[in-house]
Length: 499
Image (cartoon, rainbow, N blue to C red; front, side, top):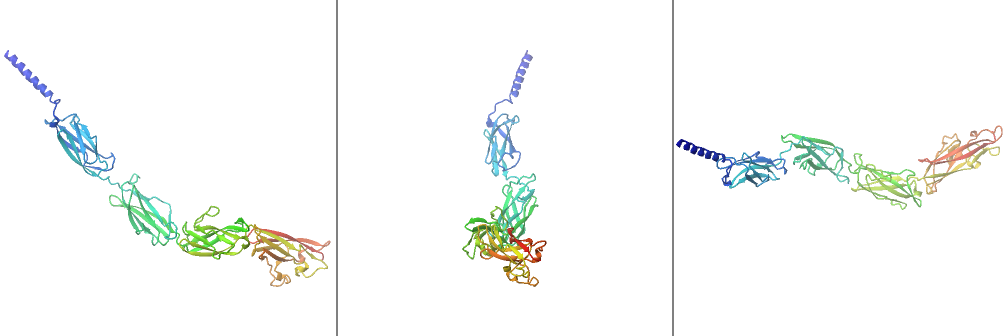
């Protein structure tokens, strides 16, 4: 009986101990009794990239006073730099609470604190700059030729040279880099940033830019751009198609529109285009945009010129030409073939003068022969070279007018004929065998646009009067305005009554 009682007591004790042991994992413990046994970070350094692409994983392990892991308890986290996601976390079955620490665009050493109940613990993580990007290649943005003008000529004297920096994947380097630009060869005075042959700058968003400025001389420029990789080696690119052109004006050639190129302005006046070709000492056209001021130094009352122009402006057809400045000249048609002085002054004060001959505009030519026939007969049969008074040497009258009926003076006219010989007045009585007897094919109009040209015809040019007189033929005289396609003709009848 006593043995049974003892066994029952032992059973109760063992059951009580078992229940006690079983309830240990589920016991309620005051948070004040929790401890943070460890706090770790996945990295000691993160980078300030101001986004969530780089971060540190913070872990804390919470245990109770009996060194058991605490499950399902909330741990709060704080930081004096950056931010945490989330700012509090529950412990897992292993007693570990986990959060992420981000830079938030900050720099420096961050202290991250974990708190549970009265217990806290901290760890430091350093927020550094963005990891250095290595430059794989560098190149100029503009591959085409760059042209600037010599300093002081009025053209473009400066140009921004831009280079791009790329990483191995071909993306622009977004970190600032020091980039050097160096002129390996350049005309005297050409410089970078008004500093000298070499200067440096800092790239922004993968772009580095400096200004190349011209000096007082023209020529070819070779520029090198370079920077350094993280291992100290150089990455570079060279551009050799930079031209400092268009120096100061050295020579000027004036030109004027040709015949029949003008505009009828009425009242006998014409408007014609003139131009000036400006070259520098190297024979290159001066810079586009160079200011040019036209004037007429003799101040003729019958002409005027549009003063303001510039190099590479458009002509009346809407075209332009390097080095050429176009303008318009107005003149009275009665001064056709006169020479007019033209002056230009460039934007830097250089003065050049030239002379232009005013062209004929839409000319016409009137022609008449006096008389219209030549007769050889028994009553009037002098020697073949007698003058026109005996009707063996008719003369041809010419009048030249422009398209507004202005008489054109000093206009050369060329004469040809199918028979006879054009001669001067002093050759009418000259023997054809005289060494000085040379045909005169050209004549020039007088102030009224008029001229007379003499012709000598010969009896042998006309058929003999067989079988019945007279033998007859015709000779055609053509007068053409020199330098144009304008011409006119007159026919002269030859009659021969005697053998």
